[in-house]
Image (cartoon, rainbow, N blue to C red; front, top):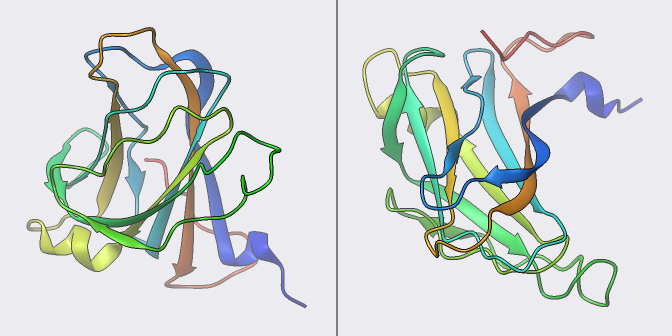
Length: 168
């Protein structure tokens, strides 16, 4: 039997709060330890807001205290219409993002961005790098963005019924 929770580790890295994506300065999610996983997918979900997230970047590092090297990643968005409107569940094609970040996440209620991080890219960013984090900034100086971020770690290196922790 296929049990998703035995193949993927779910980590709430940014709880849903009204000032989740702080105006101007931004916010960095909790740092995720990828030592026991080959992939990390960040799911960014916007709430009831009209403000777009202008910059999304991924950082790599050596620990839960040092994670500041920008890396490339893949992404797709799912924001064609406000949820539960027609087309609100249709994702875009997977695209490459540079270390500068991905394009604006539209100001759609319930919009989603799916950020794919490969452990090989994290490891290639520096010696002993096996941690990653997501940074979000609204550079428009408008009201703070409402939203949350969920990290899903997949492809465990050592599969088991109870997956290893990803938070140091």
